[in-house]
Every structure is written in C-alpha cells, then in structure tokens.
Length: 297
Image 1 (cartoon, rainbow, N blue to C red):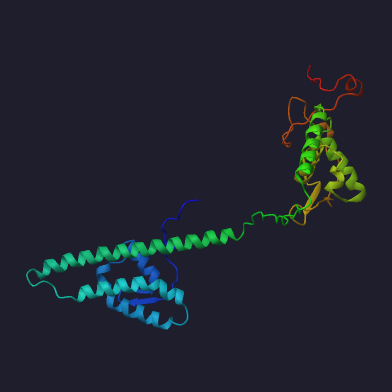
Image 2: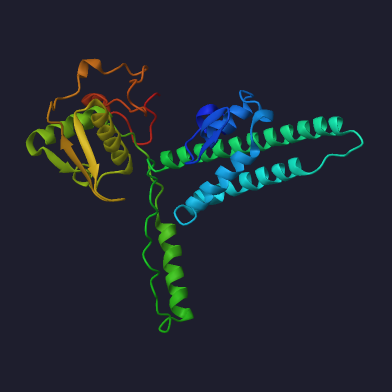
C-alpha cells in the first residue's frame, strides 16, 4: 500500500471558509490548489483581504469547531508574516530592484507553503480512507487462557517425586514402537458419508462425524471433506464462537453425492482437493499386505 499522491481530489475539500477576492470566490482549499498548480497568479492576490476573512472565520468557529480552527492557525500565521513583510518600507538605495526580488521571494515562499499545506491535507484524506477500510476488517480475537491452577506443594516430598519419575521412566521403556499403516479412507468417501447423514438428519455436529475414537488422519480427511462440500455448495458450516462446535447443515437447494465418475486417476490429483489421498485396496489384496510393508513394493 503506497502513500497517496497530492492530487486535486485529495487537496480540494470544503474547509468551511469561503474566500472572496478580486479574481476568486470559493473555498480556501480550492484557492490553495489553484495557486499550487499555477492556475492563479499569486502576485494579483490580496493577502490583506484573505487574512481578514481568515481571521473572521476563525472568530466564528472559535467555540464551535476547535479542530478546524487549529488546522487553520499555521496558514493564518504564514499569511500574517507575509503581509507584515509586504508592509515594511523598501530600501531607498534601489527600491525597484528590492521590491522585485522581495516579491519573487515572497511568491516562492507562499507557493511552497501552499504545496506543503496541500500535501498535509492529501495525507489526511488518505489516512481517513485507510481508517474507513480498517473498520471493515475483523481480525481473529485472542483466546482467553484459563487462570493458572494453584497446586499445593505442602504434602509433596522428594521421595514422592522420585517414585513418580521412576514410573515415567519405566513406562517409557515398556512402549513399543508404533507401526504406521496406510489409511484407506479418501476425501470423496467421507464426503459421501456426510451427505448420506445430512439426508436423514439435515444438520449434525462435526465432532459426531469425526468422533474421538478416530485417528488424527481421519480427522484431517473429515475436515477436508467438509471444506470441499462447502466449496461445492452442498453443505454449510457455522461456528458460534472461537474454538466452538462446528455445526454442519445441508444445502436447501440440493444435497447429492459427488459424482464418482469425475474422480481423477491415481497419478492425476483432483484439482479441487488440496491434499493427496491414498486409494483403497481391493478386498483380496488388502489382507496380503503386511503391516509396515510398502504398498509400492
């Protein structure tokens, strides 16, 4: 996200002050913009008239809008400073040359002030737009952790801690290395199971489908199946609170099984699935594979 450019849209806004001079009638911001783009000749502007109208405007909003009055103070002070320099007598040695040089310096200084003021207004508009966009973004809230549990240590002794540590060591020695076996469940099969349940109950809980007795891989497959059903518009999922129960509901338009004929080949993953899934073995070959043996052997 880049910073805004100083454009007409960002610089010209109605500030509430209408300036009336010989060659211009309109808001101050528009006058500043015209001077910045060299569409107005600064040498023909009456600083006295602008300053008087400026101070009158500040007097009218003194007790109404302090923020607006404060934003005008710098420009008012600048105009008063420039006006005071114009009122000073010129050097009698070469008055024409000094007047020309001083007028040119004042013109450049005022132009720079106007450009700076326009940039500040443009950045203020840009920040206001970013703030409005930020109000439409809802970030994830932080979960509230439970208060720490107060564990009494008065009844504990070194001998109890030693026996507990010994039990942990013995339990670790008795553990048998787990044999990882392939999971034959696929995402499409779990999608069909969930659609079948939705035909009869119309709504169900994710925990009842995944179940605490299932393996972690089955939980992952179930979650992928749910996300795919939601993407296809065949189911809806909602969660009332953070880390709360996920409620699965059938779509009122259509609840149908995914098309089996559209299932891709083994070496060509489905374009709508995000993770690969193993294909189930035939009944006769499933018994012939020993635990731990590679399926590709």
